[in-house]
Length: 64
Image (cartoon, rainbow, N blue to C red; front, side):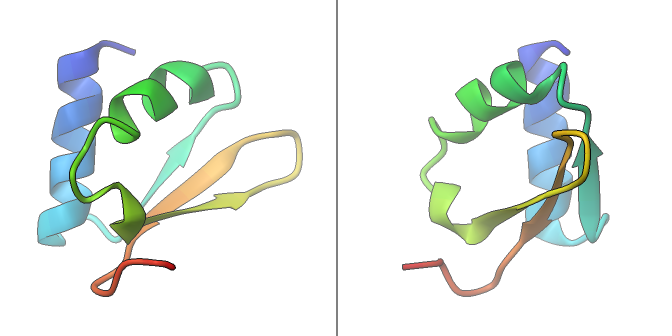
C-alpha cells in the first residue's frame, strides 16, 4: 500500500464515508506507520481478527 492511498482511507474513516476498513496482515506495518503519525491517531480503533488481519474504525471520542 502506498502512503497516499492509506491517508485517503484514513480520511474516509474520519469523515464517515466508510464505517470500517479491513487491513490484511501483510499491509499492517505500512498502514500503521501512516496511522501513528496522525494527530487524530487516538480516534482510530483496530480490532484484531483471526489470522492477524485488523479491522479499523473511527471513534468520535478518542480512546484513553
